[in-house]
Length: 333
Ligand SMILES: [Zn+2]
Image (cartoon, rainbow, N blue to C red; front, top):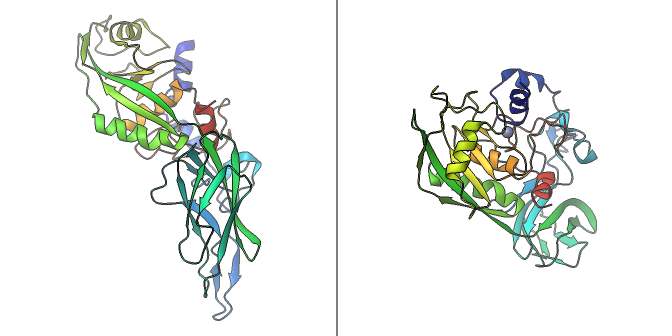
């Protein structure tokens, strides 16, 4: 029973009760100003940095966080966050877009940074709002990139430099003695791992290993027993399918005894994937690298936050692809 409870807490369980518990208060409306000519109230477009199209690494602007997350980094969340975070691999180039309420004529926006190890370009802009930045290859701390008009700061971006890391992931389809498993394509898995873990400057590469038939269904119930970490049936798969040439192993095996999507314990090498696509693999690989679910006590994310697009949401799907600032650091501790 203990194992079942752990399984329910730490793995993916389709449980609508938990979803219902995450009820949040709606955001207060954004500040408005009166339009000087028409007199109609219009929304002020705040100056802010956003994720540029083509930004290679992570960007955390709290978008899609519920109001429950107002303790996020101790920053009150009213509308948009005023200080988003961007990650960039040491020695690489990142890009962020800078948005400003349309003003005519366009003012000159000047960029500046508080750390000499970070370079950026352009130094100022009137039209192009994208600014590229790159830390030196030996630098792992953070810096603030400011945007100013006439020496008045109007928006800032905190940039976190991380050392690039590569992990090798072995993927194996496992059939049982009583049934065959359904595969997930290499392209689906690889694209999800690339898009998600590069936010933490981690390059995750998959290696497809030959599929195996393992006599793991010891009780002949045509299911894989996953009631605890790990069961005898799971151990049988690990014993026959592991390859220690890889940092992590993914076993694709259908029909778990609890209908979960996948199962992986914290800070160990093995991930079991039962159904779903590449984002499920990324979710379990997150656990294997030490990440908790977004709502869990040990998560570095706010305990009440419901970050519905986070890859560590307890109900992962194709839209759960976001890694946040605290998770970048957890994955690179
Ligand atoms: Zn999980």
